[in-house]
Amino acid sequence: MQESQLNPDVLNVEPSALRKFDHEISADPKIVKLTLGEPDFNVPEHVKEAAIQAIKDDRSHYPYYWGIQELRDAASKYYGEKFGYHYSANQILCTVGATEGLAATFKTLFQPGDGVIIPSPAYPVYKAMAGVNHLKPIMINTKENGCILTASQIQQAIDDNADLKIKGLVLTDPSNPTGAVYSEQELADLVPVLKANHIWVISDEIYGELTYGVNHYTLSKWLPDQTIIINGLSKSHAMTGWRIGFVFGPTGIMDQIAKAHQFMVTTPTSIVQYASVEALTHGQHDAEGMRKIYEQRLAYLTTELDAIGVSYVKPKGAFYIFATIPAKCHQDSYAFARKLATDYHVGVIPGEPFGDSHAIRISYASSNDNLKAFVAALKAYLATFETVAG
Ligand SMILES: Cc1ncc(COP(=O)(O)O)c(C=O)c1O
Image (tube, rainbow, N blue to C red; front, side, top):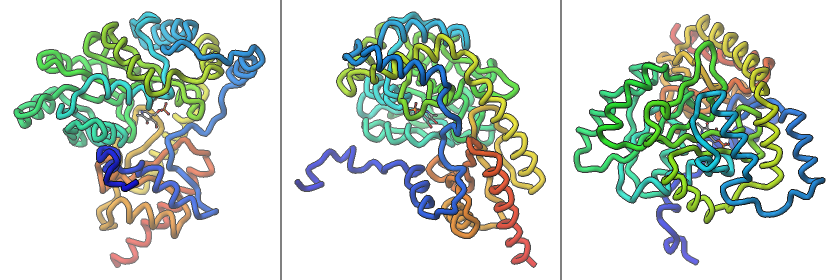
């Protein structure tokens, strides 16, 4: 079979640049990694026990394609209490991680040629999903405004793309890669322009439980009829490999998203669904211990970066710092991150795949020792530029 006979939408999409770079530097056995977006904690014990029990109880049959009733009931209560979501079980779809929820939502909401606004720096998966669905991604640089999208930027994008039907906006709150978190007012300010232009919002709230000194709010409070929320247990319960996510939205559209999901994956694994019921009914505080540790690491790193004189977007959530490569280095993000990896054995992700080739993404979902090694390496590397300068 010739490659040219395959679907060009798939052929043309790049495999994850994050994974690729992580794989590349992992060849070094000494590498200390602050690369991937995954908690360095284990799944809570009570959730593991529930999974074992589900196996013993022979929970091995096809669950209903929306997910088991107990899980959707538990999600309705848990997220209602945590964030004020107002969704009943029949408006909640259980998916194979947040990623599959995003994929089913993209497939359902948009038609080929539609424009989708993606505030940048952005999680690269959104642009890839726009690509495979034949959409036009409209990247809006938000760095000037602390990585918070404004209503006037949305209006500007509409005016600049008059030939296009702008159908959607992907909002990541808290953000990967910047850790930016929208305030209540910043979200409310977006509502009039989104309503007036009937723009669907895919609100990716996967880091909602990981905020530092601020609360997480959801745009669905003001825009319930046009918001699809993506969430899940990957980050809050350190369950990345278990692959469980949730999609929340208005009734009619959820029926359609559920169909798209059914034909892709049927439903998440039965054992994981039963274990997730436990996570949501008795694991309301599971994220808190992790959140506190992330907060301490963030304080350590920002103090060190400030002392070194490296600037960054002030993070209020998630577990990343998006730091600007000092101008004196005269290096793009790949050159900088590669040098840090090869000469100092420390791995961070180049900013380029997120839309900024002058930045690096530092994940502090990594041990204190690793963070210290990173700081020492960064200091040593940056010092070489002082020497060159004279
Ligand atoms: C913003 C964002 N959304 C979604 C995901 C994917 O989540 P999941 O592992 O549940 O598919 C990630 C993972 O890093 C992410 O950073």
